[in-house]
Length: 354
Image: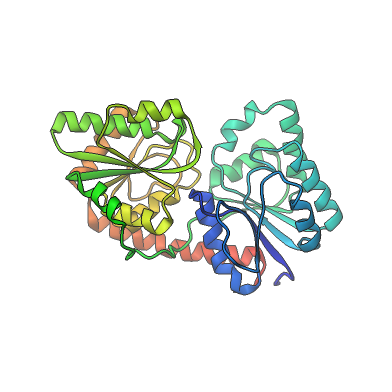
């Protein structure tokens, strides 16, 4: 049955990241059906159905009181469960009790099962208190579902819906001249998306390109698209020092990201805790071969084990030599169909008419 009120909660670009891209796409598809959006973003656009919030600020309380009574809240944020906040969590649980809204928690963080054993006593108390208050869960893969059921012992319904949604941005956007020149200055370009912290593997990608350049003599550049929502300055220096063939592009709007992917020869995703991996599929949609760890979505990609630098180099060489466009086209069509199915499932889950 359609729900009287539905609210999507979560980040939207900028900055750009997988969760923000997902929330933005979901809201864009649901807005015409009366759904509201509560979001955290560095930019604000005029939309009477959008409320811009700052994480951990008390302004969330009047928003709850004004809109959330008996509503269905689709929560894609991270500070109630994935990174339990000592002030926000009790207030959110209290608001849930008083306003009787349905709390649908969408788990998009594949690192949570690995981080949870390191939670302190207070974090665990907040985490389990929040878990008990959730109405139902949506997860992006089977591993997260099994972890919630078997390790955490949740009793609520847990539904798997991958976070891949149909790509709305056009592939016909033109690149600004300075980006076009940056791409054209090397015969081939490898591209990676993430941020300058070790988990995202920019250093491994840079070292792999450096070795391939040295062994082959080929003019290969590396483009690092930096979401810039977190940064380790020391790590950044390690990645970039002495490598003038690396181009850093920061906080690119998504249409430009897709254009950079389209102009690249290989996309590399050396991230070991991928929950799904939207950027991997977007690269395939742009016609680019993908080299990635065996985590999250892996179909149609050149795979290696996380931490296996030789495996990464071997697969990058293979992708540079043979992009296998027929296979890319096949999997692009498969993912497009699945993205449309995911959107239908999410709209149904929100509780609004399709």
